[in-house]
Length: 158
Image 1 (tube, rainbow, N blue to C red):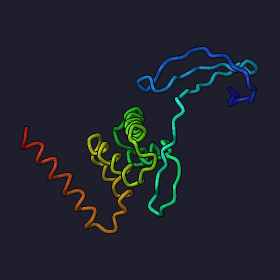
Image 2: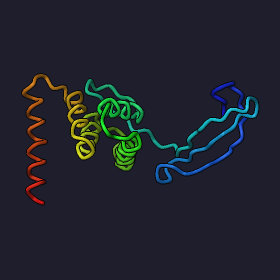
Image 3: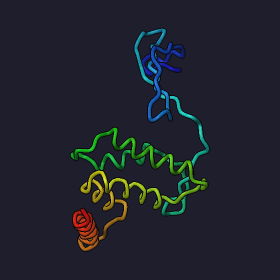
Image 4: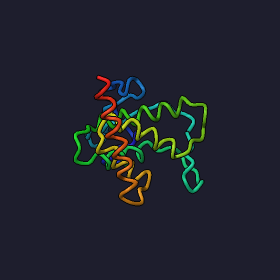
């Protein structure tokens, strides 16, 4: 493993532990040349899921891109990075477990919105406003009214 500080290609593993429910292994390493420590993650290599974008172009699923979008939606909200990483993990696992090797970006966006709705409503509306490209205030208000109705329905059922 190449050292990110000096570029030396030899390091020793100081500590290994499973993360993300055993889906990854976190390794703490020390460079044999400069002595600095860094962390690497080992994951199982899988067949990539191809995302079909709105313009019909295709690209490999990028969990970091999804996480960045969720982080933007959750700025200044009480949602931890760990929570968002788990959300992305759930989406990635469901995509990997599906039989489809190609999935439309709209499906990924719907997964993310559905999960985000239960975590933080403000972040959900932020994500939905970008994802669904709200054109005017009426579209935005329709989405808010749906959230209010769902909240009223769930509180009346309790």
